[in-house]
Amino acid sequence: MKKIVLLLVLVLGIASLAFAETLIYANTLPQGKWGIEGIYLTDSNVSNISTISLNTYGVKVAYGFTDQLELDLAYAMGNYAGMTGTEVSMSPLTAALRYNLLSEANDLPATVTVAAGYKQIPFKIKVGAAETTQNWGKSGIALIASKMMIPFIPYIGLSYNTLSTPSVNVPSTELTIGTAIAWSKEGQVLVEYTSQSLTPDGGTNYTSPQIGVGVLYSFL
Image 1 (cartoon, rainbow, N blue to C red):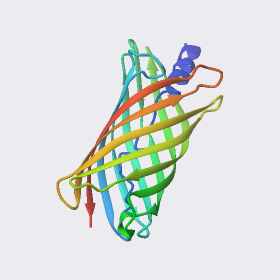
Image 2: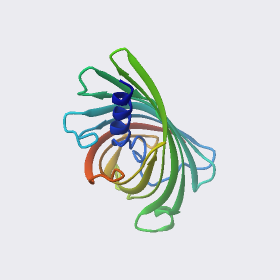
Image 3: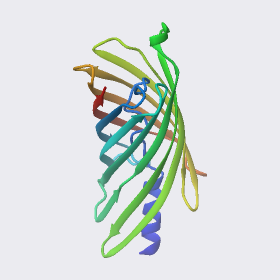
Image 4: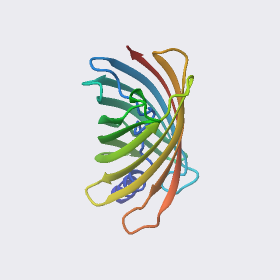
């Protein structure tokens, strides 16, 4: 049973775990301002298995240290579906810094931001009466570009990530295309699609899609 549980941890650990990597356009918050976002993500083709999906709910809080530097903190709870006889859940905690490189406020055609972050990923896996927990980590860097076309704010993000486990490291590249739809200066709804290209150590590269929805409110 222990070997089965460890195998499940490996299979699910190399799954698409892109929680809160994007779901935001390139603009950073002004200095001293706060923002909060509710998030829903759904991943399919988890670990290259079309019958397994991952649904995640979470909240993200952001703070502007300066007009160019923003800190993002996120917490989520996710559950895997399509695994008969097995219950798997995770509760990732993410911290990321975003730095604004270029801004439309300076008469440029787009806003560009670079980001770096780390995610702590605790897993809980139950197979019959056997239950185990694992704690893994994921680090990454990203580049995000967006364009104000009010009420729309289309954005694109490209990130490179590494999932670290006690036995294997799994690199992934994630391309995100999305848009924010503003209902006011402070509030927006965000919708995005992410294509994740993963290469398990010694395995075959595969793609896992993710759809994300967020509701953002900034205290400006």
